[in-house]
Image 1 (cartoon, rainbow, N blue to C red):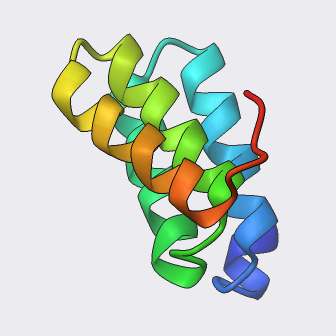
Image 2 (image 1 turned 180 degrees about the vertical axis):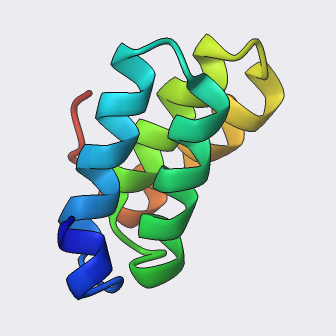
Length: 79
């Protein structure tokens, strides 16, 4: 509902991603997380979260790229 009010709410996209992943909808989760990343492409936590999701989807090369990018954005990121 928050996204209907303000589609620019990054946290709402992230929460929707988590909800969809918990329901087993990894593709839907990735779609929601990609929306969050479109709004905040340099957020290291979002980038790392997308890497974990890619890993769960069997996309290891994409996951590795996301993890490297997250560490470039924040070398102290522990995930």
